[in-house]
Image (cartoon, rainbow, N blue to C red; front, side):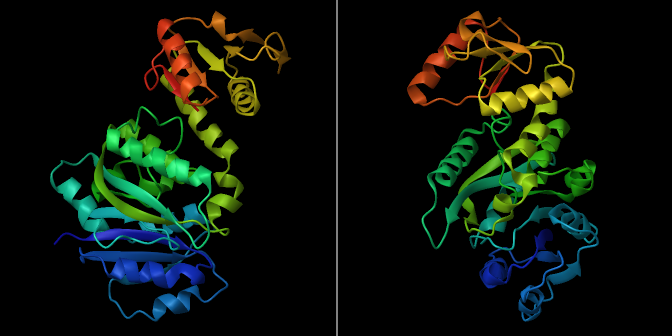
Length: 327
């Protein structure tokens, strides 16, 4: 059996580690090495891990500081044919590794396997997280990964499996920036990798107040926008950018575009904003939208208006996921 290398950074994960460890050690596909890297924990995390006498577990200390440095440390010890990531506060469904490996076994290299996700918590899951769960799973079902890449990260950070040789082809975590999971998906696209999804739920995502994504600035909205906007600029470098929406997200995007010294056109449908100058850029009526350029939508309206908006844009030769993207 080919070996899967599982990379797991952790810091002060004691409240969740036992559930995580038992889910990994119970996998139906048992040929794996589990490379855990302690990001300078001050709780009982390492003692909990050391209490499990399993030769597949390898425990190291982060050579730097933070999640990305811990993943870079873990990467140095990979020996498996395949590689994946697991987060120490989450749970693997018992068939996760097998389900993802089955996808790779029927596809050539250059394939990234993923699946569906499900949030769980001791308390009620917020509507925002449930909406993201639904959107991720719908994206997987429809195979719309790259068409939706500018909206959100389309592959959950601990819910993928790929050939180690493919991982090495873009230097794995060594060349990534925060938010590293989103950066990695753009690397998938740059390398021409095909993302294939299992119909199974392959990751159980724990929602709790201590999650890094809730508490670290590197995983807040501005970090995501600063990562994806340059990719959009590069992809559409031969077209003039049309920005729709002049509220909080639109203003942030406009600021980033100006930092790249780009000229762009800025539109709104709200009458109180039309005609204003924000960051010295005039806000135009959306009805003046130029045809066949490249469009960023900083708005994501409710279903009825979204259908009307997209119909209007198609009349001006804009197609969502092609030359127009929700941010």
